[in-house]
Image (cartoon, rainbow, N blue to C red):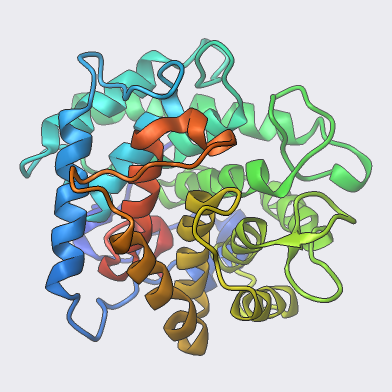
Length: 351
């Protein structure tokens, strides 16, 4: 897979994309202007405290301590949290933190392209691939070449895994590369990884994008929102995932995305609900993509609640449950990514 960057990704220039997927992604690749309104100082201060906490809790190998063991996904989320505030792997007070996290991610990639640790899943794969594509344009020539090779191998594994899903799950992804079923959560990260790779010049097959979109659409519920798997009930985190996936993959303002936005308006996020930090991340990004009344109704309450529940140390504490496994680094990274949506620094999420 050939990775070519025709323009510096961070020069705010337009990129040249593989013709095969240009028709699918062109509606979603134009950089979004900076937020019209100034970002409040208290938001910047909250983000700064969170980033300081993350930097102080990075381990010597570049990873971040979870409740059990270090996971590549936590390093990927943390790296993106710093980048979401405008810091890079080459410049700024946290360049060593970002660079160390990326090097740790690279060290976790197997020869077949799978980025994982013992007990890891395709969450590691998708999240870390997204992080690598976001940092690709920031690194120097030597490191960029290594990152490019890692992205190519990671994308090859993602594409191979998609081909294994069948029937109503066809086109999606699940916990492992050999899974034959799929869920919207794992699928969302893999689609974002493919979109990020395309931003870097990767020749992502149009068929893979179409099949991924078709699976997301099958998760749309009749009465609004998105299910974890086809036929299931809707939920806030999974709805944010579905809306963001469709918006980023070029299905802007589709009936399913608008229906998902309306579901989020009618079902505000509740603190300490299951997958709370996952929901605030995805719903903030989804609201930003939909814009208008969705943004003004969904984002401010999320922002207010996150700042209210931030610990004095600067971190966020996940509740009991699956999110607890990610520990404070996971919750803190997700909270920062949600708070930093108005900064519009991460190229992947620009409209």
